[in-house]
Picture 1 (cartoon, rainbow, N blue to C red):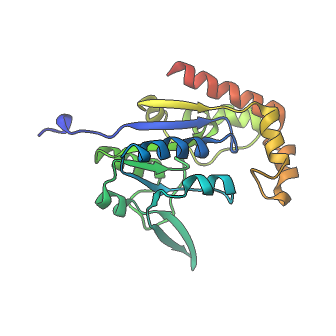
Picture 2 (spheres, one colour):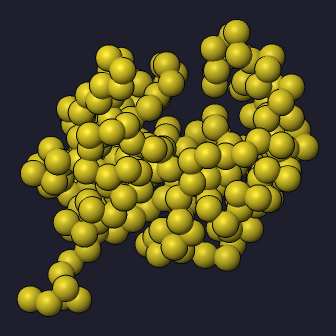
Length: 215
């Protein structure tokens, strides 16, 4: 069998304009439906950020063990890609595609872990925000004044089998943040006054809409 003959998993990206629009919740909803239909689903990495609704949505799905990386004596939980490549589920859920892994794992970046799973014929659902797209790094800095350090290559989005825009109007997202449903209460005011200003969210939403339309 040649490299071209090998089967490759399918990639579905849940794309959002910003944190809090419901990407992970939507991903878990689709995964639960597939599990009910008999698909072998494993959560490779989930980051619920303490959101009860997200944690409840994940209930009943198998969760992969975490790899613990230690940096200067501090433990950090990472996706255990080695375990997943041995387990080989039909579908693996991977939050926060652009995440930078702590030392000791197979790859520096989580998107590289995702590519290994796809190469092993594992389907992957993953979540990411538009500001992490590599080609938009300068544009996002121009819009928000924030230089995003974690990015992923455009080709991964363009080669995805499906891209789903998880959309929420700026005012609705700001209301969710104000209600404490996205960030801890002590971070709400700073979030609303800085990155999550209406003008920033409107511009980021336009970028996300354009990317999905171009797919």
